Length: 476
Image (cartoon, rainbow, N blue to C red):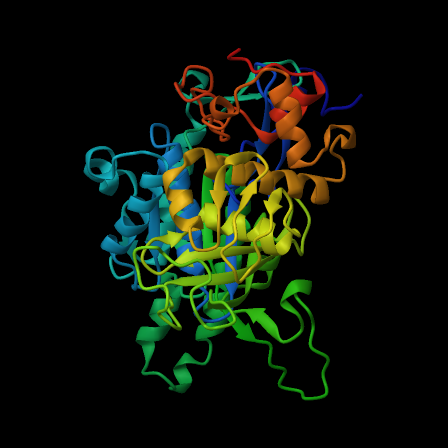
């Protein structure tokens, strides 16, 4: 007799763990999953724990906040969360700056819709007002409450199990931790208060700190999925120094190399996050003449060494949901935060050998070219920022193009017969009588109100299946 089978089997089995679609990283951290009405969802994005690390001044906080806040805006009706600032350096108005830009590209009025409820939905809590131990107690208390929720109080998703029934989860709680390196529990604070810095009575401080974090990490591995907490965190990078000069440096994660290690976290941190992103480099986004590569048209295009745009080179250092060592860029604005569409344009142009781009433009001139999925919009290096701002369809086409490239390259189990070039996809879909303007107005992130939301759902995989004649959008 198999004690794990029988009536209890369906309760014990995990069919799918819904992730929150946030763009850019969805394919890298996801896989295809069928929806209730036959649509194919890319089940990726925010999972139970995504961590960001990288070189100094690599905008780790900005990156984790972008995806964290994007999830807040997209799932506003169903989620809540918090930002725990263990470094005491974040300011509320900085969060507002990022949110205004995210709301703008989602066509949401920040002042009327988000600002009135922001503090209650997503408080920014510094360590100076809440100790690490108090934070831990609140997370556990929330878990205890959520475990008792009845099915009627849970949130329906469009994902289905093996019987075709909708999968339900607790309303997601978005937890941001910046950073684990500076997170301190009460035992660590007690050690600090015991004597002044450098005193012999504090020799055990770091061992105490490490032991407490090790225990907490072990508990969070189970606590986060139990409570449907989606955690985004940062951790600092440090030099991997050996006291014995003859000892071989052990490589914790291949992408980090032998000279780097994560600072201020226990050894199990290398194993427990679902995904760890490593920011390898950070530099101003300039051309060979030290001018802005993608200038804003309203500013002086001849302004040399302008640092408004920075490009981050990012790798997946660890992934339980996909390949490691996937490389992609993030372009960030000092004033607006991450620029998703411009990042994806640069990605397909410079990282993907101009996949889905037609024309004679190069990196340094202003000759026109266009995106194969959006051919009616002429692009150039000096106008791309404005065109992205003006045309939501262009932003969606850029995302579809980037996702198509990543699916073809990294999803080895994907049905290869569905793959094609962006140009083939555009032309064949058009021959079937579909209006591309209508298709590019659809969203490509799942929602609990998937089938009643006025903005319809359509993924890049749906488009590939439409071309193959094996799917018709549920709203058709």
